[in-house]
Amino acid sequence: MLVSFSVENFRSFHAKQTFSLIGEADKSLRETNCIQTPFRRAEWIHATDGIFGANASGKTNLYLALLASWYFVQFSSAQTWQQWGFARHQPFAFSDDSNKSPTEFEICFIQDEKMYWLTIAYTKSRIVKESLYVQENVKRVLLYNRTVDPTDEAKDTWEWGSSLEGKKITWRDLTRPDALFLSTAVQFNSEQLAIPHKWFANNLYLIAQHSNSLGTQVTDQFVESDKQRVLTHLKKVDFGLIDAAFEDETMQSLALKLTGGSGPEGVVSQQSIKILRFTHESPLTHKTAKFLLQEESAGTNTFYKLIGQVLKALDNGATLFIDEIDTSLHPQLVSYIVQLFNSKEHNKKNAQLIFITHDATQFSQDTLRRDQIWIFDKEPSLQSRVYPLSSFSPRKGEAILKGYLAGRYGGIPYIE
Image (cartoon, rainbow, N blue to C red; front, side, top):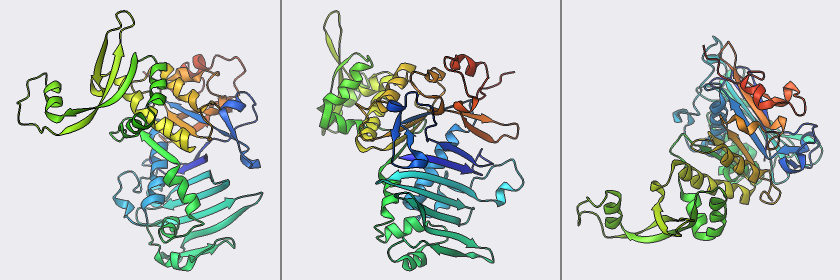
């Protein structure tokens, strides 16, 4: 469960900005939209948070920062991260000192009933700071702290918490300057550090609608294992579907259908493959017809791809972060997905949804609390500023959508 995420000196972020999912004192929608934890400093955590703002205000950069953190934890011990386009040192471009300063991420999260604080700071050549704290009961304690030696940039200084178990000296010696100790220790069988590592490996899902990374595989698996569950959601959002099923078909037959019957016979393999088809039925004539996914609308394609990721997150109690969730989706479909996470009936394992959108109709107070609405704005210095709607203390009953579109809260484009 993500508690908060801070970013400093990364792309459009210059000064430190913090995105927090900790619920404020307001009790409205708390029972449905928040998750209670045993930690006093974060007793209520949001199940959903929406990110709004003008184009080029830095919304996607928050997603990319969390993605970079994910890659550091997952792969830095095995790969050279400077080659990753999104994880390389990308400091704020409009300041003389930024290029010489490190990028820094701070991630607070809960895994296996423990709260962790992981800090990662890096330059274009190496990790310059890495620390991990944990809280299981009342007190937050240090596991380890690593900083670059001020007298020799090729060396690190280390501080060990008394509760860190295992072969820490061996893991230290195996950690490259450009790799995380956390990633290295887990690679060499640290059971204790495998717990925070597991949150990144198994409980953080990052999806960018504008990339080609969102496929159908996850939803396809649900169709084969629990088809009625997928169909329930497809039917509820009124796509006119009555069934979805995989059918055997030869590659040659499929090629002929996709080319309108003009493809040369005998050229394409006769091998049989499974093809997903959707069945529609006319409510007037009751005539049915079957269509391939690529023959369906863009909205149907998007919703089909997303619903598998949503169900997977709900089943595993994971944090799902979707950039541009509203791509090809009607606002009510976005609201439908949000409400699945804001539902004790559907969200029984405390999953979370963070979504980036331009759909301002989600400002409805019936869907999101004021502290669940985050606004990204670009300052005259071209750095991103991040703040919740609640920082404006809007009155109950205030026309928030109208106020947002009028520029009262920032985060809108100013068109000359």
